[in-house]
Image 1 (tube, rainbow, N blue to C red):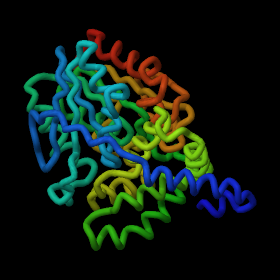
Image 2 (image 1 turned 90 degrees about the horizontal axis):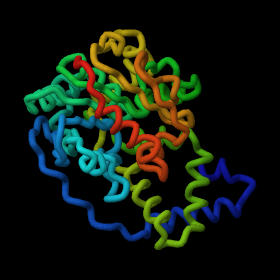
Image 3 (image 1 turned 90 degrees about the vertical axis):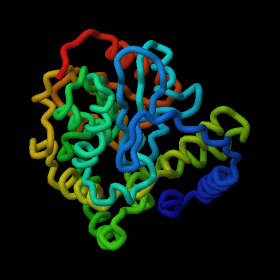
Image 4 (image 1 turned 120 degrees about the vertical axis):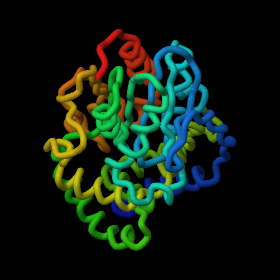
Amino acid sequence: MLRSETANAPDRMARALEGLRRYQEAERAPSAEPMPAVAERFGAALRDYGGSGAPVVFIPSLINPPNILDLGEERSLLRWLAVQGHRPLLLDWGWDVEARRDLSVAQHVTDIAVPLIRSLGEPAHLVGYCLGGTMAIGAAAAVEARSVATLAAPWHFARFPAEATVMLAALWQNARPTADALGLLPMEVLQSAFWSLDPARTVSKFEAFAALPPASVEARMFVTMEDWANDGPPLPQAAARELFENFFLADSPGRGAWIADPAALLCPLLNIVSTTDRIVPAATAPSPGELIALAQGHVGMVVGRRARELLWEPLSAWLSRPEPRC
């Protein structure tokens, strides 16, 4: 990818390689201790961030770790919401993939998310990020929820660009024998798909990083974000198969053939999308529901410089509204 993107620009290749070297050698701060678990199931934990009021259960994607929602003191949506009078809880899928090796995406909802939500003993708001938003709608079909909010979540998979669907089909065809043999799909396979969606940006961001002062806030944030983007447990084979074959290739949620239908929810539904998202295009978002459209990117909308103003504050206002329950 680097060769193809910089074939006629050796100076760009040199800068990108320098950025990659600096990223690899950068110092990392110690990882924060996880918040206490109030319930556990199949290696997953429901972690309590304190606060008050009605519980707000955050469901992250099965891909990448959940700490994108708690990325340090200044970039933590969960800690900020706790100070605003909410009670955020994080569904941490955990690294014990062996415990959920045979669970599809739907079964992660029915066998893990739903029991953990019910363990709270009262209705909760559900908020899902990326694939976690798809799963939050699935959970809301089975529990009494106060509301559902999705952040950059796909639902209409047939609306992904055709070239992305073709690329993902080829990736799964090549990766499936390995996934079948291991019972798992390695994170590196999924990461290669993300790189392929926007190879120019993948190279240019390392070029830009090479020019940053190593001790700057921007450089430290880059390292933190890249570590998150390149981290995460493998995906259980059953979940990977459903994701590729039933979601991306057959659009089972968008066709109404999955475990939930957004139009059938009785509680309020909010969809926050990014108009510049290359990973989950805005056109794939669930419908109906209220819509907030941002131009901050798939990750920037949650942890970027303007995330508090553009996403955190509107989400807090949404969670504070008195609304009927599902």
